[in-house]
Image (cartoon, rainbow, N blue to C red; front, side, top):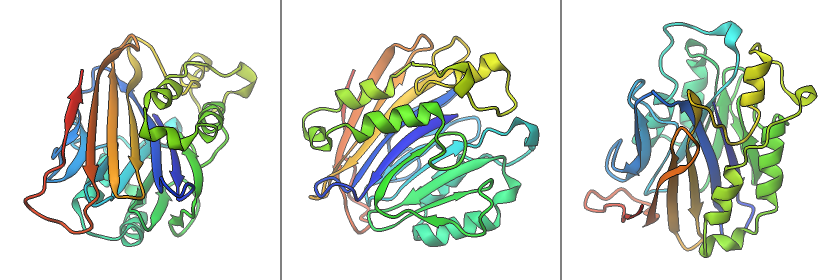
Length: 272
């Protein structure tokens, strides 16, 4: 379960802005995001159990993120891992349109998912619970994705959208602290506003906040991706303990390179 906000082509200085939380069981083994995990010039984390990722970006400006579609009644026990839909796009040179189409054709083999793949010119949304025969092209705009369909107005999605819609994007040049504070919102929804997805009421309550804290399952990390019109970009991640406190923060600034070059490495700096 995850949540992500995307602003695509909505600001002249910042053509891409992504803010996301990854929620997962705390015992599930993970490699936190860092450069070159999935190949040269790719910044992403790795889910060691499934050998895929939940969100990543390349030095060329290609990005991908995935969320589960919450549908416990339709689980496929031996389905392939959904995280590899992210890692394969980041490792490929396929256009977002071509890749999303390929995923669409094989989508029913997977448990419920929502996938967004893009670059600085095009973005596509594909899921296997949308009821649509083709992936959707994402026009310039602001989007929020949780564990239903794109822009489903669940309370947590609306809270995150409202807060980040109001965030002055030009502040990204100075600090990402306010963005991470917005992502750390633990406000749960009223019972009468909770979605009914087949989980217990207690579980729906737990999952109804943008930031989830519990001993067994919760928000493992927050990620911010921001690309400036100059080509300068930043990938920043905060990791959390099971108690919801900050364990570490890593910032990786880099320049978007339109062509693959084997000798270029993403510049990195680490802040503990």
